[in-house]
Image 1 (cartoon, rainbow, N blue to C red):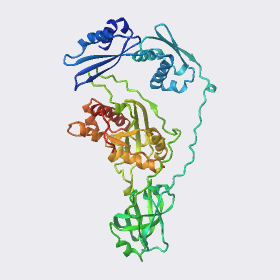
Image 2 (spheres, rainbow, N blue to C red):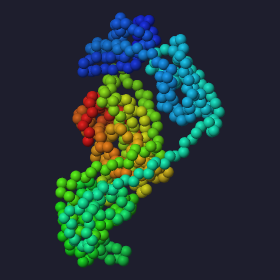
Image 3 (tube, rainbow, N blue to C red):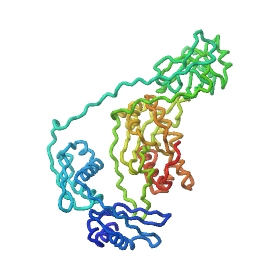
Image 4 (tube, helix red, strand yellow):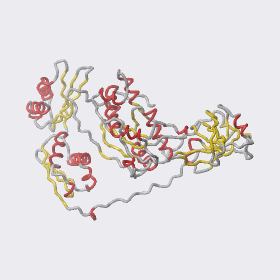
Length: 511
């Protein structure tokens, strides 16, 4: 059909004989079909009228037909950039070995010729055909090409060594303690660190805040003696923390008298317990943060200069849009960059307050630039704990798959770099996925900007469905995928997000 339409346009005027159809968009509200045509010569209003005349039979009668003519005369550099992009998308191995001067372009009488030099083993036989067909989709004129194959010589290629990031010590924030008084200690404490910065302190720390939960529990120690311990949830306005306290017999009555709403000061130390950070209090006294305490925003480590364990890959979606579907892209989509991501985890606990934060086992993210999905960032993550049979049955992820994967602490700097300057997007992201990456990024000193869009809420605003699960909403737009794998869920969410913004035509409020 598209070839038939293009032939009709080219045949209606000599000025359009080398033209191409760049895009077709439909505004269903105003009932207008716009066909954008690129030509390489000057055109006249009569050419526009002739084009609309030959296009009219292909457009439903209840739609207005508009031909939008654009004159585009590319130069050698423009063609060269496009060839480079094509190779990056379709031939990643070849792209990695391309050097300056391996692609040359020359203007000819009716178009351009090109030459691609490359290593024999990675140059596909159909490369010239692929490049020529892609160029014809984007530019007018004829294109001819050739390839020059060479043998691989390691000395010709400089393999960059891994670069070390500059040292950066994260400052630990503190605040003065007010209304201090002794409960069981003998040393006055005057400064407390933010609970949000506990992960930055390797050992001893003084914390201060309000009790939001306190529970006494009984356990049997190694000597088979029954003992008491207290589990206290403390909040200081910057975060909440789960604190363990083993009381002394002479002060246990005073600790039992503490209740929710009381303010306390704890001196204790951090330790690793089952892969999680645990703070154990040694001494508890009274004290509180300053009145009307407003936590300072924590500064993030600088964006890493390099990717170290997970490197993004170019991505291109070759699916073609139906001629009468609405393919117009609003400025809110084309003028911003987005990272759409999804996680698989060892469980559903996304709050470190309980002392048992679950782990990430797979992360997948896709970057949307200029309204198109352009890069992918995917990896398994070694959680350092056993993956339950329930999670394996749900996701298909096994211990074998993650045994050589990077740890979360290794992966988060790369994820932070991938997200730099982008708005974060996900399905049910606010209640789940963002909490995980926010926590694990901050644990290694990287603070994500909280500019996030939740496609679950956006779907509820724009659609009327029986439920708003990802597979249900995706099915509404004909998007099929393998559910419960981060790589598939993230890609489906990225496609869904583009469709939702095309409907809304503006950015929703950030979460």
